[in-house]
Amino acid sequence: MKFGNPTFLTGAIGLTILGLGGCLAIYSARSFGEDPFYFALRQLVWLGSGVIVFLALARIPFRFYVRYAAALAVLAFTSLILVLIFGTTINGMRGWFSLGGGVLLQPSELAKGAYLLLLSTIAAEETKSERSRFLRMAGAGAAFCGILLLQPDFGTASVYFLALATVVFVSTFRRRYLFFLAAGALPCAAVFLLKYDYAAARIAGYLNPDAHLYGAGWHIKQFQYTLAHGGLFGSEWEGALWSNAYLPLAHSDSAFAAIVESGGGAGGLLILGGFLAMVRLFRETALRTGDPAARILIFSSGALCAIQALLHIGVNTALLPPTGLTLPIFSYGGSSLLGTMILFALACSASGCGEAAPPQA
Image (cartoon, rainbow, N blue to C red; front, side, top):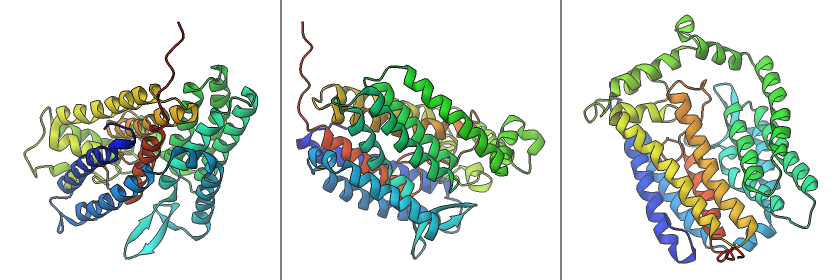
């Protein structure tokens, strides 16, 4: 996908093609069900809505987003407060608004763009001291991550924290600030594990799935069986038996494992390579952008999407404990897809901020 003001349509076409691939993967994961097209068709509707949102937001000048970055972040944070009060609880987590008709909206997915925009604009304020900028960014990160942990949603909170670390890393901050972030995050993670028994059970199931085969280890074992059934080149079309019969949430939280069963290890490597190529594309686009806030936002947007993808893939390959994260663009979930479209629209808008000045000789 190429960025820049004249290329909104190119970006929309690229995202549409990827989204259609996600719809196909969702259908494959549910092809043995009574209504195999149910989730795929719903995702197709979300895809159409997401492309419209992308085209609308990408055309807004980036200076508008910078001007109202704080207000947009407050609005996003308010939605996270409201979902704790009025939201719907699913699997022990209060993180969705129910809009009726089976339509759910997850504000933590939609808030990623505003959150990253706020961090990028603060990081680019060269008139402020390094310490002042870091403390403001850390405060924003603590607020967003903290309210997500109250849902409780450790997976999404981890993505938000790693997004903060990414912005610090790609900005002009000294590397010691990354250690400060880690020093603050580790005690919070420990408290979370002590407070919520399900989190500790997932760790135990991850470390020894055979001992918790019919409990917390079940998901880990199904990941392993699903990947093994896929082999190198996958099962025949509509032959994703394990995904349809045993793998929990094969169309959303376990999407990568389901894709590997259908497309094999080769298909999995293609997905992984695609996300890594995306990071490189966003990086190259960022380096060609003159505005510091835009440059930080563009790179961090690609990195945030790739971070969530790598966490999802790590879970699905049994390298990480289950976290409940979707695979961006490919997993079923209207909020996840729409949030990704919003994030990419901001990056597309930011890419129109002019060419970076050439380095001095």
